[in-house]
Length: 320
Image 1 (cartoon, rainbow, N blue to C red):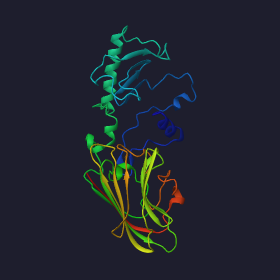
Image 2 (cartoon, rainbow, N blue to C red; image 1 turned 90 degrees about the vertical axis):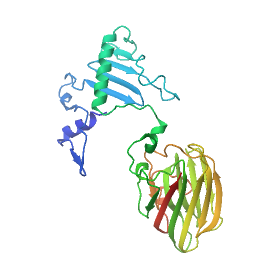
Image 3 (cartoon, helix red, strand yellow; image 1 turned 90 degrees about the horizontal axis):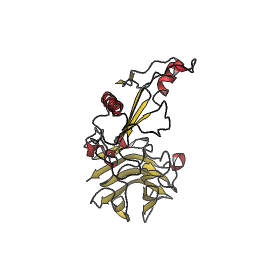
Image 4 (tube, helix red, strand yellow; image 1 turned 30 degrees about the horizontal axis):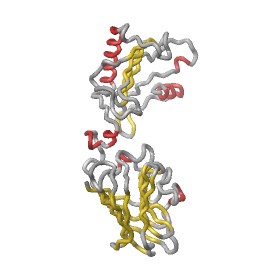
């Protein structure tokens, strides 16, 4: 896959970008395949390729392939520690394309050579130090990863602010939160999303349906919890607030949610399960609309979910 972009750029005559929006770019690692277009028998130029995901690692070099399976996707725990190199396998792909004949015990010298190549490539491409944690790595603060929102406990937004990925949004998972929305409610029936994060397979939404505000939590697309107010919003300016008191005791726990209109308590309910790691890899947080797939099916997404009033200000605050 990493050869595709260099191939396209060379084929259309564009140079590799060195700077994008003022940010210097890491050089592309792939090799253009244009040299094969007129010569199907051309000698391979991409002769070394490393692989590493969550401790699973491999190296291809000049027809030889070595790998070690640290943990299969369905396994809860690693098979061994990262510094345990006793389970590497070795294959000669030129004679064994299907990787059926493990040569590790017959050719330990070649295996050691490829292991050394892997470490060289891993250092070159910033793989080291390796980290075999999976779910823990979803929380940048917990694992020491640079976090744009590090230390932030509140975020002030307004209508039109959409497309916010989780990395640029205050982390509302595994903690208590308060959402306060200043609304301009028109005459007639008002509908739509006030603010939402995530989508059909996990997320939350503060919304209004037929004039009545509510908060919905979608747990992994498996369980939908809705806390609905006992009265509608009145036309004019209103302050809609939702307070979630997290139970604590670890990640992914539940809590008590309470709705307020202009300081008056209008709804309360339990949310038994919450998502601990992430809502989605591609869904976003949006004010005044729910882009992508819907958190709440009854409200929908895209144009259907657009709030029919105005939202001058929304504040999201979190506390542990």
